[in-house]
Length: 576
Image 1 (tube, rainbow, N blue to C red):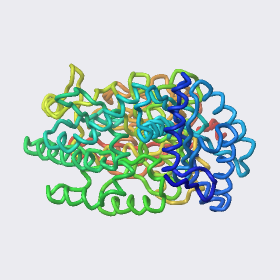
Image 2: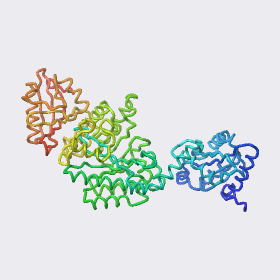
Image 3: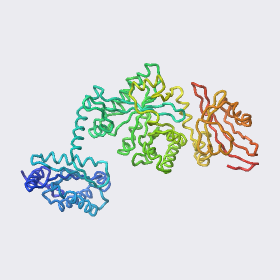
């Protein structure tokens, strides 16, 4: 074979390397040594070229080639393509050489160090095909794709099994869809203010007749890498549409369903048009389907994804940012792109007992989203303590095993009919009541924008910590639906016995409150008037409050009133 070399680095070309590597492998085996093929890949090379230019990028490739020659020798190395390099060497000292290479790489890289991913395949037979050996080394290298430090990974039997499973999943996807081996499960999302299911998230489970159960972790990444995930995601949309139609045919009221989309969905088909066409063909309102997109998808190509998100929202689909906080989360995305809801990753609650920092961060993120007019949901709710904390900080929706694990369609239908699962009562929010509860949920109990109905944020910032509460009234009873921490502290200090979260009849409330504050509260609830109320207490203090009716439940007739404690005075002197 003609000896050919790479023009940039001077290393043997890929085809020539195959010939050299085969000879070196046979030589090492003849001496009783064990050869190895080592595959190198520079992490972030594309971004490096974009930032610094191709000239400096080429200098980086030349530098790596020089280091490889120092460690392994010129004829044992090759530049395959772009930033991919391969060497053949003795396996007994491969790790020492790679470590020396990492050290030299740090010293020579000029414009900041880019990590090196290294995959190793140990050759155990003279019959091993060199091309296959290089491919296997690359497979080991690719497993480090999501790491951002220089590292090394060996190809082994486990990787071989993973590769075989990958090939099986790719080759059997169409069959799994056609035969419905892929089942769609549904996990409820509960509105914090009423404990009712207001959304359901669609999740896929692959139950294979030959291989058994595949979790999403087994096949999602594989299908994304193979650019086949759009087939799965559109199949899930089709199953959700069938489920909604089934619920409707039973005379029941379907809630909104959310589906997760992948970055490659937007590359491999017109996912917006495909979903829209399917909903229209089923004659279903677009508001019944919500699109969940992770922030990493947005960041991969911001301008393009911004266009797609806006397309969905203009067509009447709500769009959520999924897994916020699971990795690097940039607030710039929230500044430049409108979402209907942020879904906080379950990692926040997994660290719930590790100290106060996580609670402070989550509390402020929820408050930030509320200030931006964005709804919130937190994943991973597993305990009553989780639920209580999220309700207190104003998280609008909750999701997790505390309510139920994801369920197949037949269990969901049964839950619709009987409103319970495993003995736990789980009711569903009706379409008629949904606007009412959305109004209650969106009251920000950390500013007064609901009182003024103005865009003047100066007032909000001035009064951003006053006690606020939302109360619900029937014809003869009242309860607290929501309140902020300031109100809890205020009521503890001010009232001998305060109304709780369960409805309490008017005639059980202390006499001194029934004649003043309660009367105004009832008037506000019944007439819709906005009222400023001054309530005098026997100790000489006067509480100044503002109240406004927020909404009326069209099904039950319950009225919701939001109340802000503006100040407390004593003998004309302001106390708070």
